[in-house]
Structure formats: structure tokens, C-alpha cells
Image (cartoon, rainbow, N blue to C red; front, side):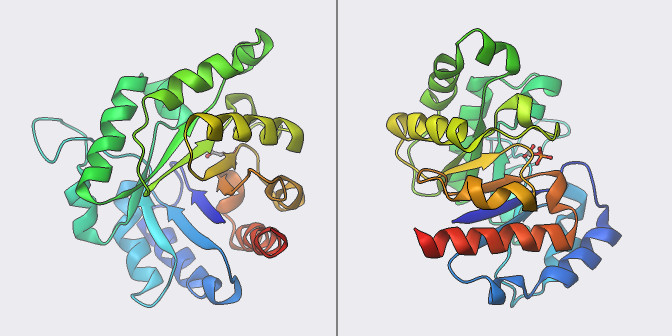
Length: 239
Ligand code: PGA
């Protein structure tokens, strides 16, 4: 069971350091789960410092380039993250695909480069509302998942785009069905993402093929993040 908080473009260095110091001991109360936070690039160091060396919370970036170095203005490479103590990165988030034109091929290159360099990867997949309405969910998932490398440090996050930041989470049945399908294509752990909140985390995480959550908005608040982690502990204990 893996609970990851995606802070998106929230929490500058000052706030990140304070938040990290607040949650650093969380894993000691949360047996059986892994906890990850994904700050913006400029808050990575402050987060690591706020957590301190003893904390078991791992820090991932929200994206990473696939090359080790080069003329890629505005990008950050896997070794640059590793040098800081960052352990992984999200790739292919739907906001990257929607607003920054990232394609399946780019997601594949980012995932491969990150894994080769030694990072863990959370690779995001998921259909838009229109694609679901047109009955194309499985086709979209198949296309997005097919480019992802098989690697023991890669986990997939199923994030239906219509559920992200909308307060409209997938029903547990929809999540379970999509997760089972993703796993039939790519045998790995699959996290659910899209409006996960303390109120719905328990029932989503209780689904047999839901192996954790990628939490956006509700991960920004220490109390609600802790409640979602606690739901993960319960689900892990019941599994
Ligand atoms: P949300 O975001 O929990 O705010 O819907 C999830 C995500 O984008 O990873």
C-alpha cells in the first residue's frame, strides 16, 4: 500500500519545510504502508530538510526528463534529483498531458530514463470524460499503459481525468474495474487518483486491485493526509 501526496504547484520552500517537519513522524504511526510526497522542484530541498534524515517519508518530483543532461531548457534530469536525495518521480500526469502537450512517447522516455538512472516512477494513466462516454476507456488505457517499461520500481496510477480536482471520485466499482484491466496489461501495483479524500479513501483502498492512492488537493493539509494514510493502514491490514 502506497500513499503519495501530489502537491502540484502549491507549497513554496518555506511552507514545504514547515509541512514536512509537521508530518515527518507519520510513518511511525502508519505500519504497513509507504508514504511519498511530491513537492514542486523548488521545494524539494526544503521538504527533504524538513523531513530530516530519519523520516521514512520519501520525496518524489512531479516530473523528470529522460536524458541525463543536455540542451533542454526548463527541464530537470534524473541525476539532478538523485543528487538531492529525491527517490522517484511522477511521469505522465494528466495535467502534463493536457496543458504541456506530453505524449505517450514522451512519457515512455521519461519513465525509462528515470528508471535507468535509479529513480522510482509513478506513471499516470487515465481517460477523459469524453473518452469514457464514448466507451473508449479500455482503448485509452491500453495505449497509455503499452508504452510503460516493466520494472520493479515502476507503479502505475490510474487517474480518470474527470475525477481530478473535481470532487467527483470514481466509484469503487469503476476504480476496481479499471485497476484490474490495467493489471491485466502490466503486472504492477496500481494506485488510484482523482478526488481522494478522507471520506472516500477507505472504500476505494478496500478494493482488491487498488494498491494505494495518488492524492492531490487532500494531501496539502496534514490532518487530511494523515487520515488518508490511516485508511491505507486499515486497508493493508484487511488485505
Ligand atoms: P486530486 O488530484 O486529488 O486533487 O483530484 C489528484 C492528482 O491529480 O494526482
